[in-house]
Each structure stands twice: as C-alpha cells, then as structure tokens.
View 1 (cartoon, rainbow, N blue to C red):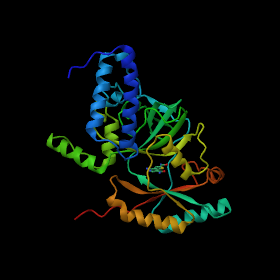
View 2: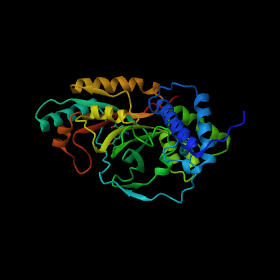
View 3: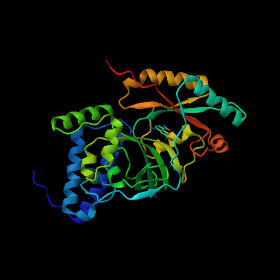
View 4: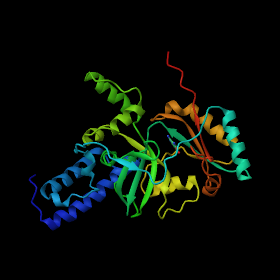
Length: 323
Ligand SMILES: NC(=O)c1cc2c(N)ncc(C(N)=O)c2s1
C-alpha cells in the first residue's frame, strides 16, 4: 500500500509516539528480559519510524532507536578522567579468606553486619554518565583513574538506556559482557571467515568495545549489568541492595541473582550455590562480590590505597579443563 505523505506536524507527532513505543519494547526485551511483543511487531514500527526520519531528518533525536545501529567511524578513543576512582577489589580464594574478611569487618564495625552478595560478571568494567536523564558519556575503567571514552560504541549496546525513566544526573558503573551463546556464534562466524577466534567472552567483549566502526559493535550483541553508583544525584538508596533496585527502577539492567545475607555463613552458602549454578548461567562469572550492605558501614570502613575494606571478591577456582 503506498504511503500517503504526511505533513511535518503529523510526522513529528507520529515519530514521538513511535519512539516512545519502540523504546518501551526495547526496554522490555533488552533490560527486563520480558518481551511483550513479537519481533515482527517491533520491526514494523521501527521501519515506520526509520521512513519518517528519512523523510524528515530533523526529527531524529539522540534517544531514537534508529541511533542504536551505529555507522560512525571513530578516529580513536579520547582519555577520560574518572572524578570518582573506579576501585578494584581485594580477592579471596578460600572459605578461610572469606571468614577472615568477615572477622576484620566485624572488628572494624564493632558489630555483625549484613552483606549484599552479587555475581562477579566476567566482562569489561564501564562507567556511564547521565545528565538530566540523557546518556552523555561512557568510559572504560582503564587504570581506575583514566579510562577511554567509548560513548559512541556503548550507544549501540541495547541494554544501556539512552534516556533514563527520570530526568536525573547520575554516574553509574557496571560490567559490559558478551553472553555465552553470542560468543559461540561470533567465533563460529570468525572461524568460517578465516579470522582469529576470541579466547573467551571477556576478550570478545573487550575487542568489540575497541572497534572504531560503531556498526560492528552493534552487531556483537553485548549486554550489561550495572551495580555501583558513583554519583548518586537525587538517588536515595542507603544500602547496596536498595541501590541495585533503584538502578533497575530508573532503567538500568541489573543482575537478578543478588542476595542480602545476614551473616557470613549465609554468604558462604550463596558462594557454594552459585559455584554449582555457574555453568547454567547464560553469561560468564568468575566469582562472587561481597559488600557490606549499609552505606554507613562502607563510609566508616573506607578504602586502603588499593581497594575498599568493606568488600571482597571471592574468585572461583579455575574450571577443570574439559577432557
Ligand atoms: N572491581 C570491582 O569493583 C567490581 C567488579 C565486579 C564485577 N566484575 N562484577 C560484579 C560486580 C558487582 N556486582 O559489584 C563487580 S564490583
């Protein structure tokens, strides 16, 4: 059926309506993992918006889903200084290390404290900055103080909101990763094309985010889990567990496997549970991150030169090579 040409006013209204609808469907699919429509419904509306933007390029907005496909060739990556350091974590490798950590925390805090336990995602640490709800800068961790500006590449990662559900200014940190199945598919493609294959999903994610052709990044099916707030802006969470829920409420993808543990025995049980479940997860993890849940305790315990005193990363033993 030939499209009846529409006026600029009608196109403006229709484009806004389509953007809102498409961004909602995209959030359901890529962030909430709960799609409510079939792909063909999304694709038809997307084509309608793309046709309008082709007819009226001035109607293209920074949060339009058509901006996710990339198409820019970057000259390189500028350096970014993190105003809030992206810290690293002290590692633990045994049950004893974890119980020793708890003993140190209780001694410093003067009481038993609760812990928020989260899966340690095997990806690339990223920092995302938003101003008045709009995504303005994405950067790699780098050395924790200076990273690289990869904003254009991160705009193609569908689980990263281009606009938050609230017009707030925040900085958040998390992990960008490649799902296991996407890694298998990518390496199959590369092998068939006679290219080198990636050793693991983490290298594949890192290699993807270093692409200078943003349309290549868009095709790599990268995803994210956000887990730290560096600049709270108007966010009100007073604990790590609540901060994760608040991150999700404003539009970020967070990992659903988190657990609030009342003592270190519960922490150890969680570690054993996910050491068992590790192979069933659709993404790689290399351990468990344990943090004192109350931010007041985190402030009290502070940091050593290298890492927070209020957190530890339990690293799983290397998986036995499949014989
Ligand atoms: N280096 C770090 O501080 C962290 C690294 C990671 C990681 N790779 N995955 C998950 C978390 C988390 N949920 O806190 C953290 S925190």
